Image (tube, rainbow, N blue to C red; front, side):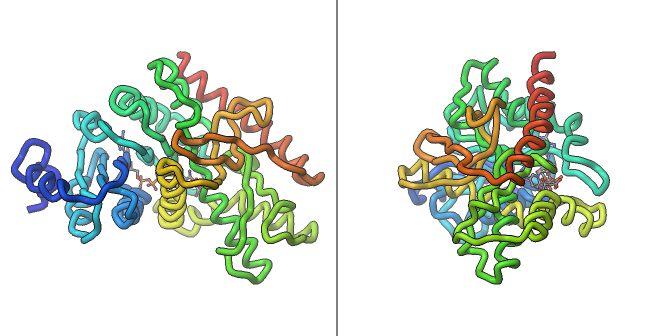
Length: 339
Ligand SMILES: NC(=O)C1=CN([C@@H]2O[C@H](COP(=O)(O)OP(=O)(O)OC[C@H]3O[C@@H](n4cnc5c(N)ncnc54)[C@H](O)[C@@H]3O)[C@@H](O)[C@H]2O)C=CC1
Ligand SMILES: O=C([O-])CC(=O)C(=O)O
């Protein structure tokens, strides 16, 4: 019964799914890798609701048939197809415009994101080799932790394959921005949708650097508010992982943030003007080869990378700490690929 979508690779179920797709709305082809996990399931649902998506490929190593069948019953435009296990990776990726990578292991309380390196580095390498083979022009949204190291790993894989385009590889730090907007709005007593906090650096601990002096609408915070807000934004991941008591890390807010970022990338691909979001990308803003700042998203990915803007003394000190930790995490990713 399920197999409407899984057996579809070469079965009558596939033919049914394809037929339904033929009259589908024009739009982009999106693959989610790790689609049956904690973030993957709600993200798959949100992407199925996104009118910019015409084809949605769900790839993973377990539970893909059920998630695919379930999502495919939603009466929205995107055609959904499931792909289970590494032998189906290439089919999942072929022809994709945007690939969102979640596949990996999340952390538990007491672990740092870096503790995930050993488990996740090899997974990211394999998936990126697939992207280089099957959809080298796709925009890649890399969510799997530790982002500060997985993005350099992905860059090295693409360089090795001769497909590297730094504009198309985007580390997702959107959840830091989402959290910053929410926590700042709480302090200001305003609607979070009216708040815009740039968060720069990377995606772990002190490398997450909210620029509270650049909040829009313009506002000011006491030193105590600045320190508390910065600490809460930097520790947002721990706050959720501790509350989940060992059962996982942030999934629902991350799916929301991933949708927000992927939608911005798709609007950029469509040619919309003025799409600006924060992302961890190859960068010359600092002496480090990768750094998160605001970037302008366009038909080719991150087409323009913005400078940091004026920093106050507290932020300048935060920047030095962030760069110290980031340098090691980036090097760890690069070294993994040179072994
Ligand atoms: N960038 C960010 O802001 C955030 C990143 N994350 C990270 O996102 C990642 C996913 O988190 P969750 O969805 O909560 O984890 P999860 O464990 O619930 O889901 C991960 C999925 O990946 C699949 N998977 C594992 N190995 C795979 C492989 N070799 N090939 C394909 N699929 C594979 C698993 O079967 C599972 O379905 C973690 O690395 C987590 O740390 C989480 C929250 C925020
Ligand atoms: O904290 C974690 O492990 C997951 C994550 O990256 C976040 O929630 O920001």
